[in-house]
Image: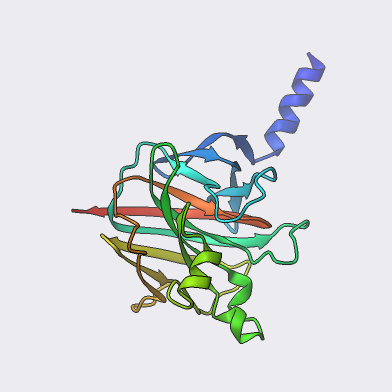
Length: 223
């Protein structure tokens, strides 16, 4: 009995809940190749997402997927905060963003993410790679950069350890990314010609070396 009381007391001290599914507002999130926890950070209820260390490739379906969401055109908005893990590799950039139009089996989707460490780099080339679009599985960042340099990346001022509002507006083959309260998009994308706009799920996405936090998720669908 005493051991049970002690265990219950210690459990009550930990406000982080480890699970394969948690709620963020009205949305149920399901873990896919990530660890998913519910936390409080800077006074906000949020979810904390870290990529599964067994996934070695980049630009993979490493996200918390919204259960029962069917999205083709509309707006996805969420506040994100990115930190680097203590064991993050040198090339980690705080990768964090949104995946959308995810098929049921996670075989194809589109994504836009940010690299917060690049936003204030003293290397102009890195600055130019602050924002990234990609389409899984055929159009990852390296292929897009090689075949369509600058068409799927952009610069914007950003940094780690700070809440950033990401808003993605998509309609058919056009995607726009807005940051914070900016009225003009920081990235305007015409998707690759063989990427067909289709209805699918939404995911909160991170990549290697990132401790990602998400809150205030809002979704508006249009026909």
